[in-house]
Image 1 (tube, rainbow, N blue to C red):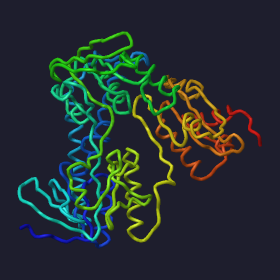
Image 2: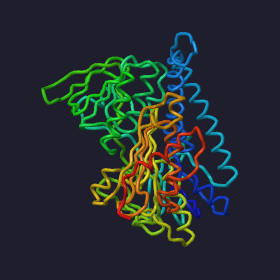
Image 3: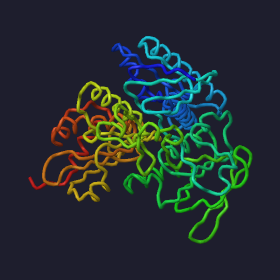
Image 4: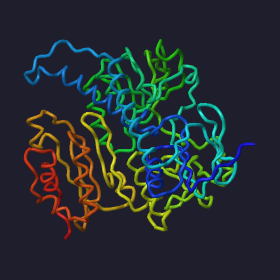
Length: 465
């Protein structure tokens, strides 16, 4: 019988929040074990955030070179060496793995590579990747197992062996025709990237618009941007059957308002949402309850239903962004030490890394309407931001929501150059409680994208105060 090893804290999964917690606790003198099934640093640096943005950037370089003549720069014929794109991405991942291993060594936290599942309260059995079994238990346990790509129940889909974002980032060839099921954040980022690498791309979105969580004007602007680059977007089309094999020849039968339609391609990418990795890890033996959606049930302090057991990140139902997992770490870190931090008082920004990117913080226009919050709205086309006249990055707009009867900034959305950086300006203003006039009258550097914020706030209609 395997002997149980005891730790102060055991963390199942080495995602962003979990590893940060492990390193912090290890440096603080705690005996910590981290159980990780596959990726030393979790999915973000290995197969998700960093790799995808690495390839999105490579695709942007291809786009800029292909359009260089517009700026008076004459470039030779452009082609994509996808194998080199893959090598560049993998070299980055390998460098990051080395950094992670060094941080584990420095902190004293032990990394156990293997598949773990609960065999009792606060006790995890690990089938190690190199062979053998270990059983570890902690005074406290943190679950940080993340999520995986959802696979819709479409006849023939599994047999076609479709790509998820993981496999899409491992391609060493440019797909002749990539079909993307799903027009959400992952779908549109990878669709645009592969179009720029040279693929024909078709997005299939069952809903009436892509980017369904965003306002209609945002979704429309992103859609026009993709269509202008030659991407086909099929909205309101229901995938009914998949035939063939990904990477060779694949076809998708769609249900439309006028009957069935067949589209054929070489590769198929599924980007239809995420599912928590909570099945078959023995949570019932640990006394950890799940929500109806399959996420771990937690309170506002990220405590599960089992005493001494916490959950971090996407498996706990937190918004599916790496920066939220980092904040989950801070919440658990402080609450383990007797604090009272909560998840319901934070302001979470989001960025979609299309080109130009889309970023938002606070309320969207639709959310304000659904919640019955009266607002004033200002909107500014990016072509009115002076920097875009120099760079010709005139696509998109800024939109801000301010209280109808006060000067509170309630929400901000931008589709445009450097959106991820500009949204941070408004995030800081909201956190500081600045009235919108302070941002409107600020002296921004010229020529910057943030300079447009002054004109945006000037576009607000008069309030009642």
